[in-house]
Image (cartoon, rainbow, N blue to C red; front, side, top):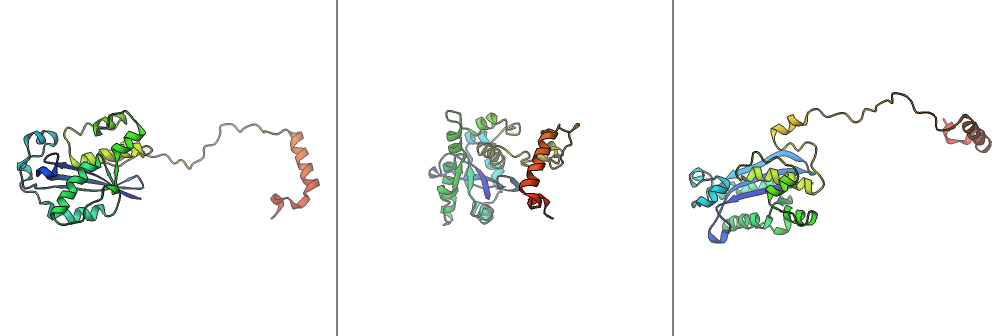
Length: 229
């Protein structure tokens, strides 16, 4: 089962007010396990980034000046997500912006029904909790030290960890960053059986064993299946 965890950063809160997508980040999951494949693109929004929004994600108008337009990356983006379900924290927000960008290029919109919203899952699993990404990361003891500002790829990686906690617990090694593999250390081979220091005492007495043997010989003789060769 292939899933794509997705996040965006934007110039504001509503594309109907002329705001645009400026950062897209995606993480690929296969059978609820990160494959290591990601997609990330900064985008020139063809407008300024308001100062109050810059304080959230740290992405400035100057930084985006030489970045590609959405039209230049749309095919690569759509190829990466394919037809996989999209795991998104607050899906209606991100899809509203992505569909506005797709509409400008006369491309097919992404239906909301395709999204798996981690906020909806959290509300059903832990009613009454706070559902921001930061709060859910803290609840599940997910490391936030690298998140001083929002970023689409980083937030999609954090969303992936929250999602896996919500649907049944993270894998022992998510491989969401190079440090994960080193931190995991060697994995024990659970297939090796351990011998007991002292064997267990027999559960049947000699009298019971003799009675069973006599019964088998009388009732089954050589027809007992364990005597077949």
